[in-house]
Image (cartoon, rainbow, N blue to C red; front, top):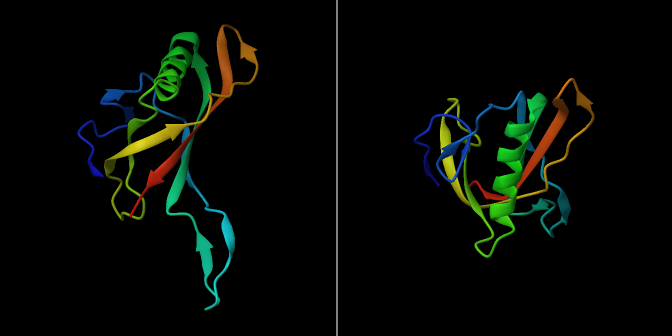
Length: 124
């Protein structure tokens, strides 16, 4: 994890053409409780990004990043707001994978409700 140079959302040092409308760190699933009564969580977090209305070329950029993840390298470096930081500061998280880009209906040449889930993010 290193300080992100772009200062905005990016994958493999390429800024997104359109910044997401909404983003959030996804709450981790509890895998049970240990003998001391503490929840057991994965060491990795997920991050969700969404866009309300996005052009075809902007969707293609997201799909191209997904295709990089499904290639032999299997991961990207994601520049995201640092988890748990009091400042809105971007950091590069390496080894990140992606879920497939999900889309909704088309509206006058644009795609609505586009979502991208980033997986396997080590925040500590």
